[in-house]
Each structure stands twice: as C-alpha cells, then as structure tokens.
Image 1 (cartoon, one colour):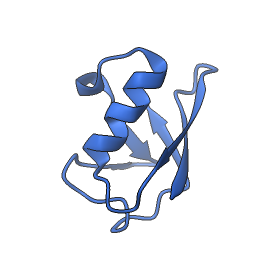
Image 2: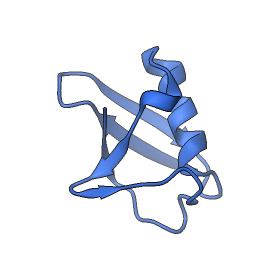
Image 3: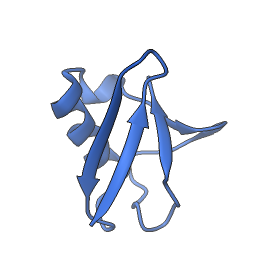
Image 4: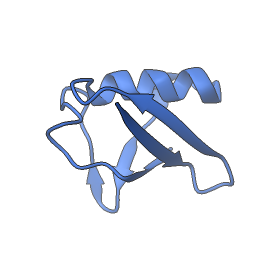
Amino acid sequence: MLEVTCNDRLGKKVRVKCNPDDTIGDLKKLIAAQTGTRWEKIVLKKWYTIFKDHIKLQDCILFYLWYF
C-alpha cells in the first residue's frame, strides 16, 4: 500500500492511499473523488515530467506530485 501526497500549489493538499499495481489513471480517479474535480482534467506532474494514464505506480517513483 502506497500513500501519495498531491498538491495543487494553491493551498489544497491531498493524501491518497493506493496499491503499487494501480495505474496513474486510477490514482487520478482517487484524487478526483477527494477533491471534487473531474479526473479527466487532472494532470499529474513531478517537476517537468507529466505522467501518462497507462503507467503503473510501481514503474515510476512517486513521492510528491502536483496536480492541476
């Protein structure tokens, strides 16, 4: 079980628990459930890297993400 911390850089920070075999698209849906935004509008970034929806969390190291 992973705990991912996401920040929208406007003061809203969300902590989401998910499995390592979940995809980025699944993570976006979990974030959307907590924040009330549509999951299609969420873009997960770490610095300049934008994560695509089909990548599994175990394939990329995620410690702190920004979402827009």
